[in-house]
Image (cartoon, rainbow, N blue to C red; front, side, top):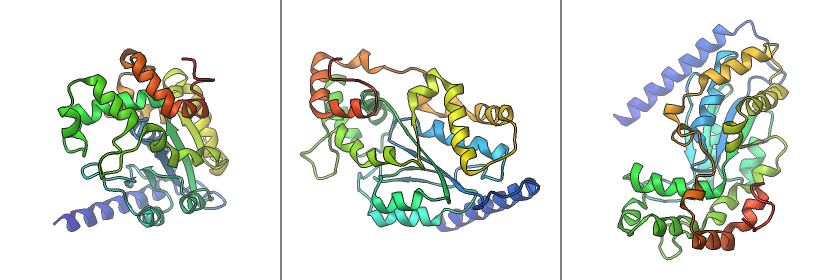
Length: 286
């Protein structure tokens, strides 16, 4: 039954793609054909928000009306790490006009495949201090099937959970390293000219400017003759805060409400250099 439902969804999805191509038949295809729009994200960094923005391009070009699929390197309910080949199979399954989303490590083979004219890739990330706070709320209160849910609930208070979110759980079989080690497999996306990096905070504090940069990155591969005003309006109108938990509050720097001096110390010890690499701090004096 699940297979039948999955097959039916794919049939409907491909029918929608064909309908989009008919709708935009008058648009000349780009030199290398219509690409795949790929949103890569570090967990708890605005994944749904980026998905919504990329889907906005379906209003002006023959891209999918819904997300093709989502890939994550870990299974949420078991914590099992996927085989690297699984990520490549997922990437190979994507087709022209798809819009897809992934927590995707920047392994050399994935980078080689994504950084080609077949893709228009984006990478969104967030202040890791806000990430660890968001992770605690998500695992403890919002996702009962998460592999760490019962453990987080067994801890006496938020402070102790936040320490685990920063330091990881090196004492268990399920892989959950500290925050710097969790981010490390994504870092190479920042060194790829073909991938546009997006600070989640920029979408809060300078949404118009950031959306224009997203448009510029798109137009470099897909030179539409559509007005900038219409493109910007299409992306703006696609944003639905109610369906993006990270974006709903519209706040940044929430870590300041939750970090004690002890949290600051252990974070600096394990991930101080990460904050500098990502541009959130100039040094460890914060």
